[in-house]
Length: 294
Ligand code: GLN
Image 1: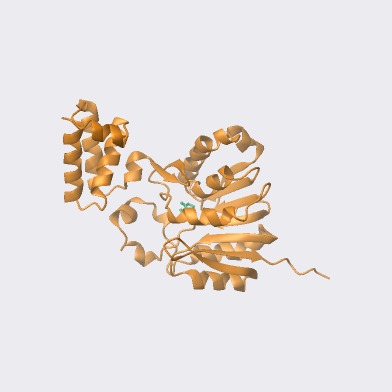
Image 2: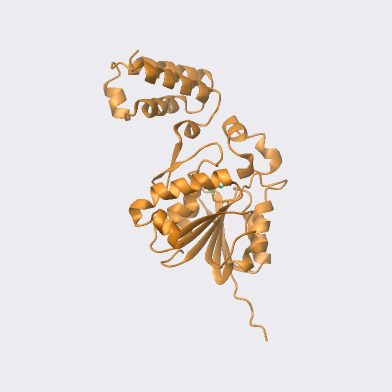
């Protein structure tokens, strides 16, 4: 069979399975299997595909038709211009979260220490360190499988930046298995988190790709979706400097609730920022300095 023929078949099978981006996914999987780019595929549609590639492609199409997310099949997702490895143990980085990273970058200066809670693939922390100088980061997750992915990403993506496994040893970037602050030591200039924030009963209404294939642990924010915001805000005084900042990604309807929690906890300048789609996306605030004890 030729590129053109296998591609046609892939498109048809994904369309029949009602995959949202059937044509795009069929092409990306073909590029993934054949190690070619779009232009080669289009310009040489009559080239023969090896038997091995054809079988691999058909197998991937079958798995995609069964609703396994594209990124779990190709193993990567681009985020902030960087290719992050993903698997079934981590939330696939979302474009929405790039907005959170950009907001943090406006406030992250050379030499600062940043704590990323619920780090997953490490996409937030690794991007922050990649686009600043000399910052130090600690990425925390409760899942050892997720941390294994984050460490691989750090090794791949921070090496060309003067960072490496070596710098991990020097303490520029560390990952820690911990339930939020449980095992965290030290004090940070910035705490950032995109925690699980979907209300439990909403999860079953999401696309099968998400509800059946992404880790529930990375999605479920308890009954009202706010559990992790509460816990992170409650614990932050021990680990955030006076004058330090806390940044959260939020669901579009959580701005009021999360900013109220932050204000009650003594945060100043609490702001809800809208993303490029005009939806509330980030809540940030500045922790007041402790009043001097007499
Ligand atoms: N921090 C990671 C991300 O933004 C994982 C978030 C999560 O697991 N809820 O992609």
